Every structure is written in structure tokens, then in C-alpha cells.
Length: 143
Image 1 (cartoon, rainbow, N blue to C red):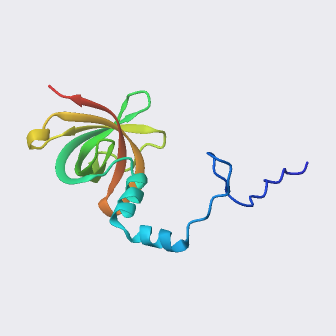
Image 2 (cartoon, one colour):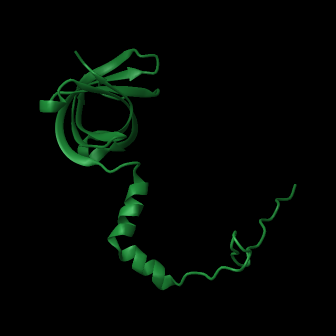
Image 3 (tube, rainbow, N blue to C red):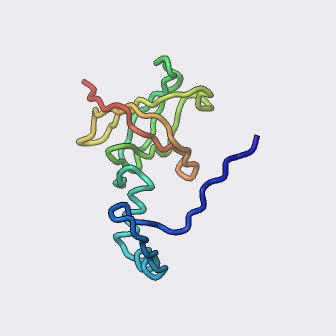
């Protein structure tokens, strides 16, 4: 069975009038690449939202998919955004993370954040911080 070849693109045309569109010169892209706005635009696409540096102590629980407690311990939230956070200096009562998918239940323990809880799932390892990047699923408040 032979593969279907992709059509060759000869030039770009405008969707509005069907006329050929001139290609932007490389100088335009070089200038844009040096601008702060362009850099911020690219950085915003790297993460869903910008992170704010913080130092918030937290208690953590690792829960398996069925909600069973796998481990518990502590961590420090190093940066946070509306969609996720970096948990650093994670200390749990087990020697390893679960092999199956798991989530964190995080309860902040600092000042005005005391009692705010987050359910989050790990999205990346951060070995230089002995931690994990997490994405939030739920926010709750403890009594």
C-alpha cells in the first residue's frame, strides 16, 4: 500500500480575496524575537498561566485513582498560578511514588493561606527542587 503524498505548497493565498500573500522578511521575525512582548507571548504559551514565586508550607496526601491513601507527608509550594504549582522538598512516609496514576491532596499551612486545599495531579518531575509540578483539579477549604 503506497502512502498518499502531501500536496506541494507553492505560495500562500489570502482567504479574503484569493490573492497571493507576500512572505514576511526574516528581519521582521528577528525584531519580534528580541521584543519583550514577543518573549512574554511565547512564555505564556509554555505554561497556561504565569507562576508567582511563594514559600508556603503544606501537608500532602498521595491518593490512588480509587481515592485510597498511598502516602502522606509535607512539601513547600515554591510557585503557584491559577492552574498549577511547584511542590518542592517533598517528604513522604514511603520511599517511592505509586506506579499507577495518583493525585495529591494539598493543604496549605501558612498565614492567610492556612486551610486552603487543592486536589492536583502530577505533570512533571523537578529533581533540582526534589519535587513535582502539579496541575490543579479542585480547590477546597478545610474546617
